[in-house]
Each structure stands twice: as structure tokens, then as C-alpha cells.
Length: 481
Image (cartoon, rainbow, N blue to C red; front, side, top):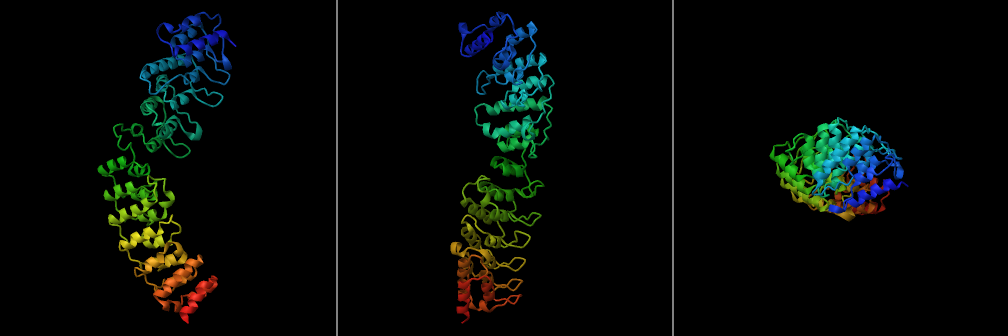
């Protein structure tokens, strides 16, 4: 163990907390060394030590002795050591420290240390400095004409990495300010192409927008003054749950019915798919067309019924009941209750009756549509009504939707294009107890439907026998007696 090296190191450590006459003159310690080639633990040189404590005078002294910088045991250069310098983001004297770091980095570069040398762990010094928001280090690199466009994990360049991590670091006091300075330094002189994408096909701007740090997003977008939207499109603002940005975009005349090439949805469809009650209200009241059909024939309410519940938590809404509130908002803003919401001409009620488990919102959603005055007998292209759709696979024991439909004048005798009635669908319901209950309701409504024959020459009895539903067979025998 080298006593001289450790003596200087310990002096640096004590000086961090010393003041006035208690500060040790480290240059005198350097001058007292008989051989500047001494090293410390892990073969660190005196350049590593001086860099870690941003001792500009120490580096100049070592340079004047003719000492050549070398890497330590693990491939770390003095530039790597500089990234471990104390750089407290919320320090009132941060600019003074920044000036020392920049001067130190400049001197190390002038000494000929390779700024693109990776250590044995594959780390680049400037990459590490950037992740620490050590903007003076980046400025020194840029002033020296060093291109900083290398990529590391997941194909991310330094801008990718900084912006991706902002979401977790933005609450650290002072972090946004120094991150902004770091990004500005990279934009000025790093040589990074802002359009470069990582393995997730994502640019730094997109990561900044997702993080919610719109100061940096605006900087990357090319319009630093646009801190309201951070350069987001209306679709991006919706997906980033940024109501402030959406409000600004609506005010600026954004097309609320635009179908994005990337997302293939309107903003309102995205707000329904990744549920956000506030966003749906904002868009609907901002005059988005709640009945707009995209190229695949689907509307916002289609995504609300089929996607929202499984995506709760991926939007801003966390409460399942928000889905009911969102449907209520669409209805209030002129939802066409009887319009087709997919290419099979299913209405919202028909899609709902076809749905399986909807976190027990099946009944409340059906009630909202029925109370809003939708046509309970509106068939789809195959002639299937909501009653048939529910009778086919619905859980009547749990949701009582067939009873709800029949109580609002659903036609028990209606036949689809294959000649099937709701009774025939109920006879084939794989949930036999639900099938039994629906059959009972249908026979109470119109017992004559038991005699109907479909296009394949089958009666409800034939279908019940085929599906081995003894309870339904018994009900039908009693009805035909």
C-alpha cells in the first residue's frame, strides 16, 4: 500500500469538510512525492485521484512532471474517475463546481486521454457523466469536438437513456434543471441524430414526452417555448395522460377526429381504450365526434366496451366505475345508441351482450344504454339481436341481462338469417344453468317460440338434446304439453 498516495487521498477527503486554515495544501503534498508514478488501490494513478476531486492545480502539476495518464486495473481512465466527483444537483454552489468539472475534463482531454475508451464493464465516461446530468463534462467534450453518439443497452444513445430515466428522476430536487442543461449541451455538440430510434423504435423525444418533463420535450422538439405540449400530437398527449397538453391542442385547433397512422385510432378512441374519464370528457366536450368510425368500422364506444376494462390502470382511470362514467359521457355528448360500432353492424348493446366477463360491469353498462333509449331489437348483419347475443353465451344467473332486455320489450320471437330464435341460442348456451334461466324467461314471454324450426330443420328441443341440457329439455317438454 502506497503511503504517499493515501496521504493525498486522505487530505482530499478532509478538505471536503474543512474551511479556512484547516484546508490542507494538496499541492505541497504532490511536491513532496519523490516518484509521481505511485498508484493506489486497483492501480489508480494520481491523475485518477486529482480528477475525482476536481483538483485542476494537481492535474497541471502532474502534467508538468511529464507523467503520462494510464488506465487503472479495471480499464477506468481519469475521465471515468471524474464522473465519480461529487456533483450535488441541489447545491447552491453548483455552478462553481460545474466550472471545476469542465476545467478538469478539458485538461484531461488535452493530456490525450481517449474519451471513447470503455472500461472493462463496457462503460464510456461521457455516457456515465450524462446519466448523472454532469453537463459541464458534456460541454467540455463538445468543445473538444468529441462525437457522443454511441449506443449502449437496448440501442439507446445518451439522449435516449437520459429521457427514458426522467420519469423516475424528475422529482429529485434540481434534477429537471440540470437534466435540461445536459440535454442542451448534447443537442449543441454531441452529433446525436434526434431521429435515431432504439430497439423499441422510440426516439428521445418520445421518451421525454412520456416522462412528463415537457421542458426537455419542448427542447427536443425544436420549439423550446412549447412547454404546454412538449411537441406532442393530440394522440401522444392522450396516451401520455396529459390533460394540460390536450387542452392546449384543442384550443389550437387540433383535429380531434384524426386517425393516426401510428395508432389507427382517433384521440377519443385511445382515451376509451386506455381509459381516462377526464380525457374522454375533455375530448367529447371539445367536440370530438363520438360516433366517428375508423377504417375498420369501429367507434370509441367499441373500444370502451371491449378494451377499457382490461386496460384499467394503463390510462389515468384506476376505478372500474369510471368505465360507466365514460359511457355516460359519450351518451350525453350525442352518442348514436343504435349506430353500428363495427363492420358486423353490431350496436353498442349487441357488442355488450356478446361480451364475456367485464369485471361485473355488464349489467350497469347495459342499463346505461337501455335507459338512454337504445333499440333493444336492432340486429347485426347476421340478424342477431342483443337478446340472441346474450342468450348464446351470457351468464344470466349473474347478470340478469336477458330479463332486463325482455323487460324493455325485446322480441322473443325474432328470427335471425339462419332462422334461429333467442330460445335456440339459449338451448345451446354452454352455461347450462344460465341457459335454463333464459329459456324460462323466453317461454314466459312467448311459449309459441318453442315450436319454431330454423333453416337447418332444428327446433330448440333438438338443440337442447344435442347439447345435453336436460333441464332445458324438461322445460320445453312442459311448454309443448
